[in-house]
Image (cartoon, rainbow, N blue to C red; front, side):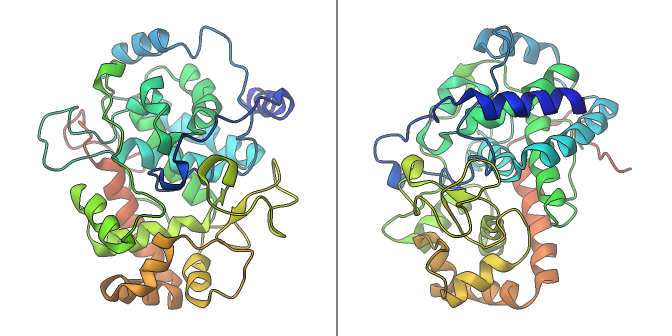
Length: 342
């Protein structure tokens, strides 16, 4: 698998394919990472997969065969391959974004599955990949599609969340208490409507964050803790409308140079995001309106100040919030799910 991943990474570097264009009005596109980390490495270009791998109909057929649950042995093997992928391509941010954007469409007010959205693998379909908030995520799908092909007895829903949690852990973040066994939707008609993810620059940032995250069943602590994942990745203005074309921290990559990061070491997961947002001392680091709101809103500020001062507290709350987010809307088989570390 290491040889296959290395070959894939080489293809990604060499292809030179242009990135998906930002959607009209991208400055207010909805996204956890606002088109942010469409891979610090090779997001501008996609792996040129064999034609039979990525067409929508082929993916839907494979999904139908494995929709009930995932095989634990194959998930463990896939985790090792994801770790190798991360080591060779430095794609941590875009894999985090992939998992978040699949699960973050959940609506707690809708009981029916899959109408309620959430972690159900729907993001693999073109209709959802073309949502403004998801621009660039086709590159994440291309990166992990060879792993899905190698392990057919795992669902996309589980693979997306496995990749996201593994990326956090491999970047130095906390161990996420994950469970698996998520079922996949079977066709693009089951994708959620556009407009479910957060905006980067709404008129009232704190109110907007609460509106979106409360709809998912998350609270203020979850909002602030999850915001801390912006310690990873970069925002590219040509895709999202946010950030500088290049800074002293991004001009040399790794991967394709450019963009603006929230932190100086944007492939390291720690509490630097909160420290930098609080100080606002470096003009080469990005601060979105929704970032600034964490220290402006009184209720958010309690947690933001805590995390800036105490990385251990941040890691604890982040791990809990990430696990909660990864389960939103999922239909598990077995119903209680299963852990890979039992």
